[in-house]
Length: 453
Image (cartoon, rainbow, N blue to C red; front, side, top):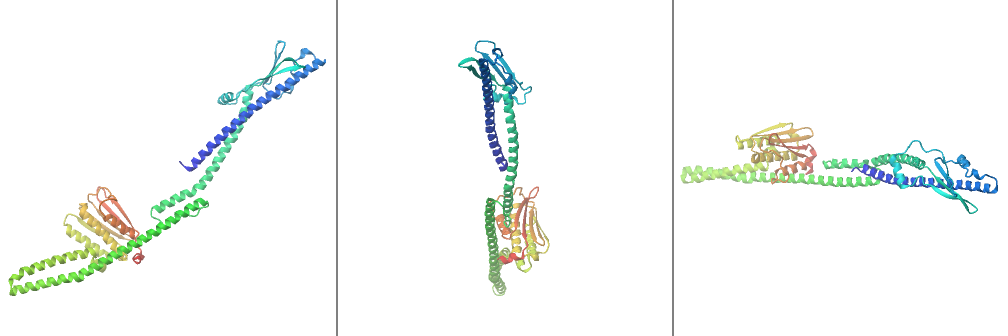
């Protein structure tokens, strides 16, 4: 649930609970005031009647005029009250009502039902009328239940209106305050998503609230640590690649200088033996030819190893010539089963050596995978060199119809990804419709890449 609405719902629940308690208290006070008014009216009217009896007993009044409610009717301020006097001698009771009941009900029927169940509106109060220890009758004061309900509704309606305005104002203020207080949360989430996409150089801005500032500082420290680790990992990967290439260059040079020269010498000696044997002993011709064939086969294998370890074109002619030689070699080896094509856009000479070697190794690995697994009729290698970025795309129409899984048995794609990430590049895989695999590697062109070794 959204935190803002969660807090607002809690505030509304608490406000409703407080409103319910306050309403109960207001209704209780209204009922208590109604009973007090009835009691005051009964006491005041009883004193008037007892005073009338006192005047009659003193000879200042007439007994036939008792009880006289004229004064009470003229001075009563509470409408809807009915009084009844029942003489003790059993004579006919005398009743009188002050004012009228409400002509229209201005309160809901539910309110009236609840109020009647909780309280007792219209509760009558009786008191004896006595003088000199003689009881002349009983006075009963009955308030109007409708008037009590109307008074209670007026009290509670004002409270409800004020409470509704107060709760609404509080909710609006709380919502705006919370929205402003939680605004950094969205910035932090967006920053974490930016960092998750690989932009570890992004830093969260400072915030006003201390808690958010602590969170931002912790996230920034974590991002800085991860960025440092990534940079160190990339530098280490570049060093490892360069060391590997240096080792390959050394092995290629040793094979060429030592092993290749020895094989060439063996081949020359075999030719000399064959020539001598033709003149002096034909029995040695077969052995000499066999030595020559073996040495030629070994020379071919050495040339193949030299090509895989360190193509001569990389150092002598550059990346473009190496790729052309690579594609031509695969075309000659595959016969008519797979047709390999190469397209180069841009100047490969602007590429630093680590990037050139990495792109060649990636192309070499992709073509090897195509030859082993794709069963493709056509494969295309495209190299595009821009001012700030180089992109290598290898695409085939083989049998692949779903992207390979990261946990597959092969390590070719993993090696390609590591080589690309070591130079701050990226690897993207896609299925070519209806089938076939598309491998795209992008590297930023930075002359300083070669200095990282």
